[in-house]
Each structure stands twice: as C-alpha cells, then as structure tokens.
Image (spheres, one colour):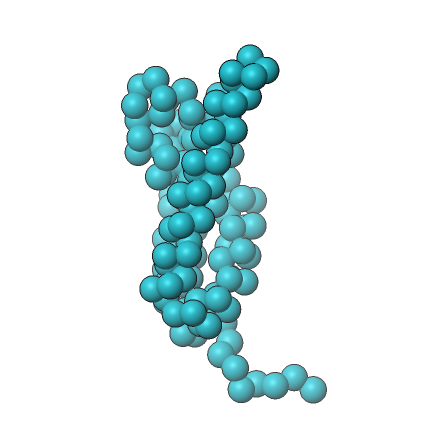
Length: 128
C-alpha cells in the first residue's frame, strides 16, 4: 500500500537535522534557566533605542517556550522534503532569505503601526 523506496525521517537532510537539534536544545536550556529569558526576547524597543542588534538574530531563531518549539520543529521536519529536493545549500539560502524578509516586514509593520495609529509594539513573538 505504501512505498518504502524514499528516504525516511531526517535521512539526507543535514541542515534540518542540525536546526532541529540546536534550536530545540537551546529552548530546553532556556526552559531550565529562566533567569536568561529576558536576553532572548524579541524587543523592538531594545533594538531601535539601545541598538541591541543581536536580538534580531536570537529573537528570530530561539523560541522561549516549548509549545512554539514543538510547532517550529514540525515545520522544519516537514520542510526537510525541500532540502532533499533542492540540496542543503539552496535550502539554507532559501531559509536565510525568508528569515531576513520576515524580520524586515515585522520591523516595518511595527513602525507603521507606531506612526499611523500611535500604537507601540513592545515585543514580538520569538522563534521562527
């Protein structure tokens, strides 16, 4: 009924496997050490006023709770098919490009809300 000729699991998908292990591991460490939670929040005020640009990277990659990590893990696991089809290098460039574009759109939307509606967005959700 089902064919078993294709790759199963994370076979032939090293980037997806690495992302799953590293990002899940960092979330577990942050869950065990809650005193470092404030360092990884995706705060737009800290980025714009205090010039903490590293929050763009950490806030967009590392999830702060386990439910978001589970959803991100499912997403990465399902996108392993694209990595197998296009190759790890092209898949990494696709992930990086979409990551940069969504970070830019998040920032521009928050600034537009601030100028148009006088509504200050303090924090955005962390994670992919």
